[in-house]
Length: 256
Image 1 (spheres, helix red, strand yellow):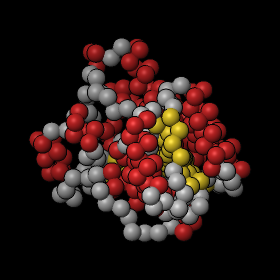
Image 2 (cartoon, one colour):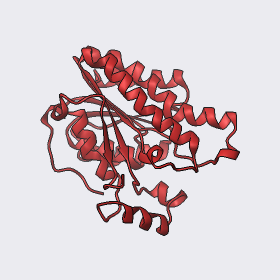
Image 3 (tube, one colour):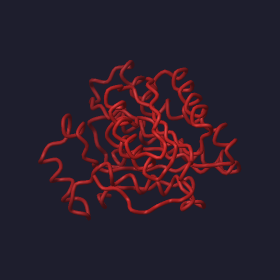
Image 4 (cartoon, helix red, strand yellow):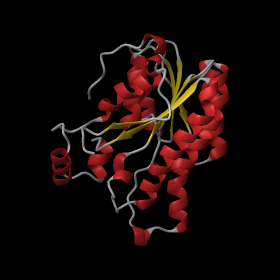
């Protein structure tokens, strides 16, 4: 996993909340902010990997990261977790909406219950987490929200329409929030990852043939990992992108 060498001094001591931060991409983001000297809280439903991450990062962290266990599909619990994070960190300036569920289910097999669950995890919670975080970010004098979408909805991928619908919706949500929150000094942007190789992806979905095909499509002829998303996220969270909002940043090795 790669980590950016760039230092963003304005992130030092800044209060950051990452959703889905216990493993995979989220864990890389948590570590990235911790390395910048930020005060980081993260939300995840999985306790064991999240506790292990805290223990690992606490050894060298200026501020030990804070883990809050919650199922984000419960709006009430998600909003309570945001309030807890802001209160325990003392403020909140950056929200990274990373949590999602990239489950595969085709057209004929999607039920109403499944559709509602995927939308609850991938899109609905992102709005309500943001809604809860905004008053704290506004009170801090402004800040940034970074939403994670995906290039999948741009590739006409037919294996998981509920997921791609949610990921497309995140772009609309990002632009709508940016328009509303810009006067408050709150910037809202989105990151669209390409094929990011994580342990979960390798265990559940990725095959050697599939990875080879995507790398052949990419301009950069290598696999992408979670560390490749850290630098762009830090950039969007920091003052380095102070005039940037309502935008999408594609990190896919040049696949599109």
